[in-house]
Length: 77
Image (tube, rainbow, N blue to C red; front, side):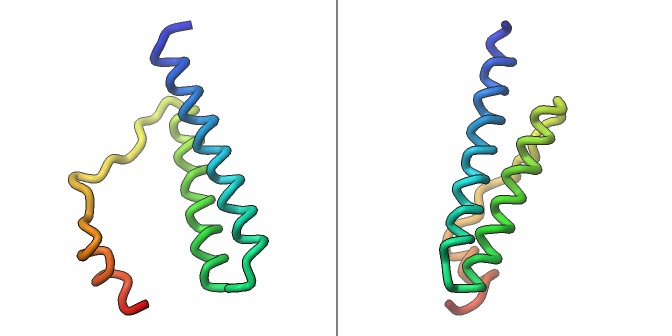
């Protein structure tokens, strides 16, 4: 098996495992807002895994968004 394929499969497995963990955390929390966020992140991981498994490239941001910018985008906690 070519290395790229093995690496891709490991990445898909990791994304799916992470999605399961996020979904489980969402089920355990009493905070509905946190549950929504966790479920959204879980769905994003599953979508990434599907794209990668289908051979399509994963979207890569041009640059990471600094934490200070993310806080401004989200609003006050």
